[in-house]
Amino acid sequence: NQCKRTIMSLPKTFVDSHHHFIDTTNPVYEKFLATIAPDLVYLPDSYKTDVVDDLAKIGVTVTASVHVEAMPDDGAREAKLVQAFIEEGKAPTVKGVVGSVDLASDDAEDQIVALKTAVPEGVVKGVRWMLDCVGTFDGGKTATHVATKRHDGIDYLRGSDGGYDGGAVPAFEAGYALLGKHGLSFDLQCAPAQLVEAAALAARHPDVPIIIDHLGKPRMILGPDKLDDGTVNPNTTPDEKELEVWRAGMKAMAAVPHAYCKIGMLGYIVPGWVRTAEREAVLKGLVLEVVR
Image (tube, rainbow, N blue to C red; front, side, top):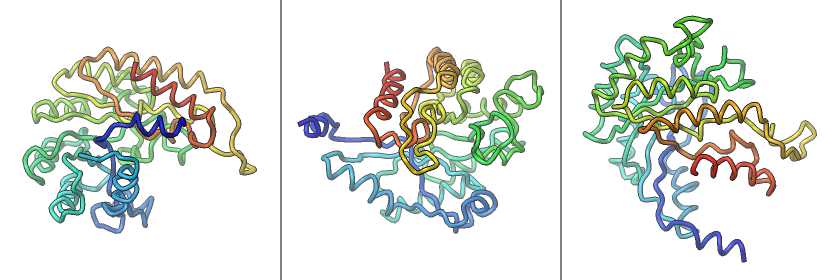
């Protein structure tokens, strides 16, 4: 049957390129993330149950994974926390870390050095600083991520309120350039409307590999998962305006030779995509569009 054919076509091994361990009861997160989600805990035992063990049930072995920063107050301290899990045998799949550095800060290089030296040489693969910004954070009603509150809602890629000539904030670009010097990549998490400017930034720095997170983050293209009455949203017509902006940005990124893309956070793109075959088909089409 179709189920058996699908399982048989799965790979035998899998590298998870993007996951998080979070514990907002830990002082590593107390100044920012804990103020938003005070009791958010997701540690290696949960990851093993949800990912490693579940995939093993269908014959897929997680051979390696990359831990990506989760808005810590200090990237080096978070990296040390992850390294402790590795050394204790709690996170055997983790082979790399993408750490947190505010690249626009005056001490960006000090933060990079601290991050790299907090763990054994070669563990830190890159840096992420969340950039999703289409205006001031409005409680999740737009593509602006709550993380941008850490830098007063400034759009590091396009400037803010007409400033910076509509381009990258100079301090951020200066920090971004340091990644090449230190042999690190940059994980790009931004809104579709920022992708064209992100591509221009990446093109100016060919020595910094850039990895697009979450398929470029087109937002809720079929609307919410459920309607106000609790029923599954029957809409199967994508938001073409959102997709037009996303496609233009992804085409710009595709022209950058050192750009890569992760397929993930699909529930942000189409909430509840597993609920109906129609919603799944829309999402599958977008994934194939990127891959091809």
